[in-house]
Image 1 (cartoon, helix red, strand yellow):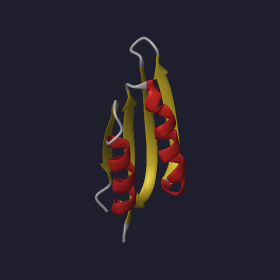
Image 2: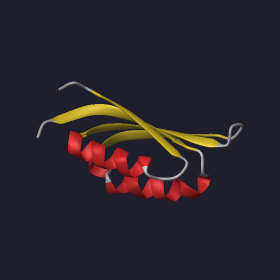
Image 3: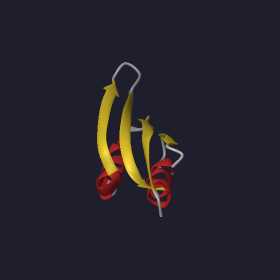
Length: 81
């Protein structure tokens, strides 16, 4: 299967789930190029940007598991090829 490059944006509104988010990112570490996390204390959220290079199945697996966590919003943008 062909690999695609993209960005996954994650907003964590429930701090109790930040450890689960980090665990999932570690499990999918082989498709992660880099990541940047910023705690936005004034709004009580954490914002994480993840650069990825993987198959649509791998990326979908990561974003699907993240999206099922309570208080976590996930959006992704991928290259067309």
